[in-house]
Image (tube, rainbow over all chains, first blue to last red; front, side, top):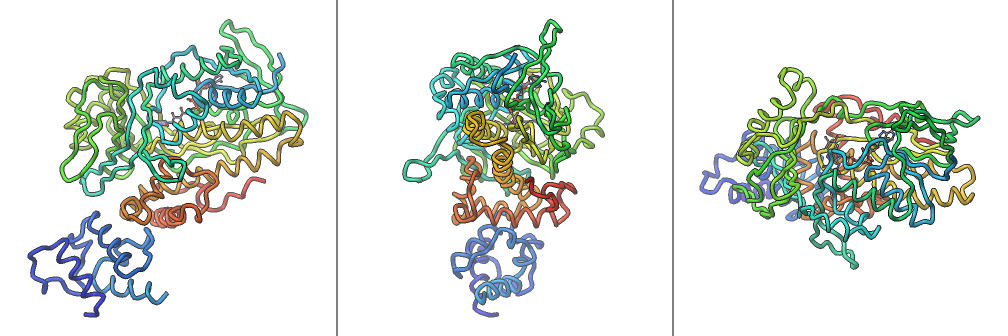
Length: 83
Length: 440
Ligand SMILES: Cc1cc2nc3c(=O)[nH]c(=O)nc-3n(C[C@H](O)[C@H](O)[C@H](O)COP(=O)(O)OP(=O)(O)OC[C@H]3O[C@@H](n4cnc5c(N)ncnc54)[C@H](O)[C@@H]3O)c2cc1C
């Protein structure tokens, strides 16, 4: 995993899955559709991404198309950083 | 009779328009068909609505009515997870957000206070029903109105400016003066409402850290388009209403009262917990198809103000504010028009109506985004970057603001577009689907 994915993974594990086995959270594990992130957690994740990576994430970008897995999140944040 | 300005409708929109005009030195005639006090729905208001009333010097007399005040609105989803709190916040002299309060008004009392005060300040009031418009030689021109007195006697009132503030009655539209009245996005909804006694008020909720003020507005939502309001009106009585798709209401085959009493117990567990006694303290009433818009709502000698040209949806209590704010914007224009400074007025009033539309468009975006993209909406409300901007919009700071003033407006618009394209919302709303030509 890239460092972005690693950072996000740690955030999700610490915030929403305390005590869980880190190996269970893989790059393509579904986060929102898989029930790991509820609506409020998804909000917290998106705010974290904004603040940590200093990117701006618009409200319409906070859906499953960008945030449903570590791989998607990594690609999304990289595209923001490149823009 | 001949009067410079005739206002049709003596509700909060008509009465405050009259007071704004009086402040401009213009003395209007108000035509109101009902004897006040009369029942009306629409009891919660925004922070900026309070400011409009205070700017008219109405603070003390409204306070004397003893209306409760809310500190905010709590919006609770059925699953509890997508719940949030919108405080009433005002901007102080340094443009800092400070906590505020907004009145929760029993409309029979509130509307009478405003109308009485308009009369006390010099407005003329006639109890009569507007029945027919008097047109000018130019088909777009209005020169007055035929009114019918309670005796059945009819009278022609000539006017230089006829203001339609008849609310959902949309009187000038029915007279064929405006462009046609068209269904809005939430046209397929019905609201069923009444009042209840002594429900549980004001405590916090599991997992949601909220102020516990007893007089806050609470919005409960369940499925898409299925929601309820809870608006305290005094120490005992709380206004409650349930809004659902009309097809759902019809499918139940119940009376309004039975429908409302059952929904109060079934719509949302937190609502059910609060409603101890479903006995209604008022007749159960219903308003279907309340959502519409009228594209062209001003012309030579006439202007529509408030609900009478557009109503989206009552979920966030914007109605009173919009009608009163539009009157505030219109009054100085009307004075200048009467003074001959604006020619035949068409240009000036067309500009005015576009300003009003742009402001309401922000609310259309907000409501569409809320229903169609709950996730993105929750993010806008909770993100520290946008939270205060959203609070500003909820409070009513939507006139003459651009994305530069409130960047969240742009984000709200993009979210609403996604909602409209995503197929979750009711289908067409011509006004917000991009092919309505701007009124010129
Ligand atoms: C279900 C529902 C819930 C709502 N909840 C809220 C809320 O919580 N907060 C909020 O701010 N808004 C709410 N609204 C909206 C609110 O009711 C209106 O925005 C507000 O009443 C508009 O004020 P107005 O003075 O423009 O019109 P109205 O208050 O409707 O007044 C119009 C007046 O015109 C008179 N009239 C009509 N036809 C004629 C005629 N031919 N001749 C003479 N007089 C006539 C009527 O008798 C009436 O007194 C709600 C609306 C609905 C449908």
